[in-house]
Image 1 (cartoon, rainbow, N blue to C red):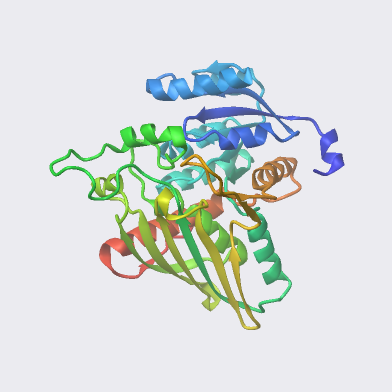
Image 2: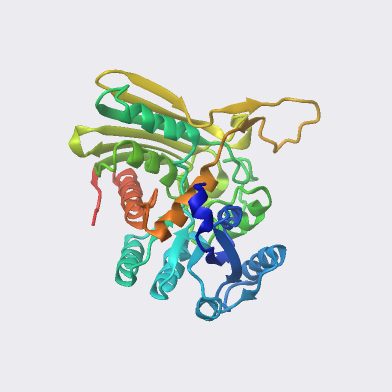
Length: 374
């Protein structure tokens, strides 16, 4: 952190629901510029959401209010951290923006373009900023950007990204007795919360393109200098997990992206199960330019540790030198200060949402689909 930044006043942040994952508010709490001062959510939420909010508030010794607008006014907030169910991301973020607060929001921004547009309009109208959480400060992604910017691969013509995420999602496909009732999406997500595999928490079933697609698509957005995706062709399947099949959402997908300036990007993505990989998954970038090519593993640098009686859920390969969350928090602080742009803005995330929706439409029809940009 720049020493001069430490002299700036702290940024008072409210946690606007913390029922999806708590890595985002924890990341800001660990940064010296941010001070968590309250947790808030609506009073009419189900008991499980109230419980999660209460647990987080007690751990940090801060008040929990079941009235966001009261919290905005009473605690003189500068910003909010939005991490509810994905279907509530934009609705809560809009309320914060309307109160004149900066917003950092968990991914995905939304599963609906009209919700994304509503947030973008509220941000612009009220002169506040939004950062959407991403992984673009991982060391391997930073090095990939440096390889492109330095001219090592020349003019970029194509990118391929493998993003196979090694987490389970309940019973494997076909493993339940014949005649078993369909798995309820929300019940499965609540059960999965204990081991952190509930990426699609909420009442709206979400496939892996919607849950995890923002990460590799944000890589592509960064590495191509923000080039727009014009058209996509995609195929999806419920290949690994019964919960995905029962709720008609994907856990495996391939996408071809036709981009402006003649570039082409391809993406293979899936939730492949914890037994499929010793690390968080097989995640690699392949860059091709007119002077060379590069293959970059997203998990590097890492160390591997294998020993007797190793817990089944412990990753055997551990990332090192990973300061992504700290650097994103610092980026958000500087966005609020007016000295940097967001690593991934609401408008950027809206384009990614449009790309994902076009991919899902292509998978349904079997036809190439245009991307609906602003």
